Amino acid sequence: MQPQRYWREIPQRYRLEAGRCRRCGKVFMPPRGLCDSCRSTEFETIRLADRGKVHTYTVIRVPPAGFAAQSPYVLAVVELDDGVRLTMQVADCGPDEVRVGLPVRVEFRKINEVGKSGVICYGYKVVPA
Amino acid sequence: MREVAVIGAGMSRWGELWHQDLRDLSCEAVLKALAETKADRVDSIHVGCMTGGLFAGQEHLASVMADCLGFAGVPASRSESACASGGVAFKAAYAEVAAGLCDVALVVGVEKMTDVGGDEATYALGTAADQEYECYNGATFPGLYAMMAVRHMHEFGTTRRQLSQVAVKNHSNGLLNPEAQYHAKITAEEVESSAHVADPLRLLDCSPITDGAAALVLCPLDMAKKLGKKAPVKVLAIGHATDTIALHSRKDVCRLAAVEKAAERAYKAASLKPEDIDLAEVHDCFTIAEIMVTEALGFARRGEGGKLVASGATAIGGKIPVNTSGGLKSKGHPVGATGVAQLVELAVQLRGEAGGRQVKKPSAGLAQNMGGTGGSSIVSILGVA
Ligand SMILES: [Zn+2]
Image (cartoon, rainbow over all chains, first blue to last red):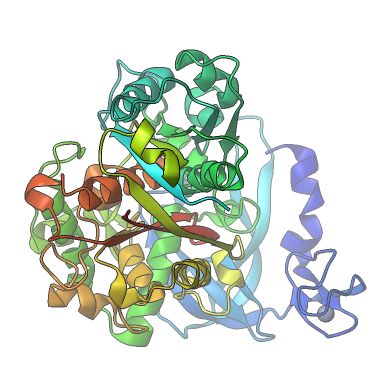
């Protein structure tokens, strides 16, 4: 993970900052330069809801590099209370405890450590609420 | 626009082939495809490859392929759309021939996947998903398809056994295909007791890592008699579409909108309906994918793809045979080659050369190739000329 690549996404990963179209109100995470609903290019920064529920999930048992220490872990598509969906880990939750509809709360957590001298990556995860 | 025919089709050996590199595999497939024709030249080369760079440290495949195939000097280009790269390369070649930009076009799909270890392969395949918003948080490809499966089961009551039935059927078809990577009859119980990958998916729900290539030779239909040796196969239509890169951005995570749109465009252009298709090769990278794709193609009603496979309708001899070649599951999945190999199977079937897995007198076959979790898809329909 290159520092500049990591740094660029900090507002989204640390503070859940999304873009809301000033013309039609559609919310984009990550923010983007063009609204696919109304083609507007005017956006305001908003903060996404920090509560939501599990829309779908899996238990990752063959992890990618950098995630071996956490395996097995629960990964989910979470629908936040404002309707935005994101892919995130469900921490502090055993493989048998997760279900569709499980209420969750967003927390700021360590995601992983890349390499011996690499960046320690932080971001959002959810925990059962 | 000119009508276009497929006059040559060929595949290299597929499997874990340590003694063969990108060039050897491509050359083997291309020589077989060209041997089916009387063409004494190639006007254009289209390469489908997802990531020669990450898997084999080699990009600039336009030059590499023209060189190793003995056609240096001929214009060549490479198409990339993750696992749909082969299908997209076919479309590029088709468009050139149809538009009259060239007469004899060569399509070669290739991927050399086993030069890297498991972590590197997972990383390379993961680049077809959203790196910053899926992979960053620990997603893997089986994990993303597993989340589609969980939601499909939740909404429609699709069962674990129905997922297994896809794998059982495709391995049973692969037994009849000498070119398949795996020749092993498997049972639903074996699928369900194989190693966990990403719940509910297990090892035997997943397509394998494969080295392999496939090739096609295209020309205008009115030149097919002169340039071909066998009965030509006609390209009836190609439909192509995209969707969001991240699964979570879609309104419905168990609906493949890109496949639906690509199919709709292809059916419309060919003036055909799903019930007019005699066989289909579909992108069964995971068992749940085949279930969802059969719905998107209109072979089953929404939510009923699981019931379709359980009914036997997609077996050889069924109402709509799916993946007679063994599919990605049993034939193998060298990602850039897959879309081209699906069309090789259709050509073989439409010519009546498929031996033990031959579908009875097919007149139209459909190939559906897909990138990532459905972020891109291409549907091609071939027919007897
Ligand atoms: Zn808007």
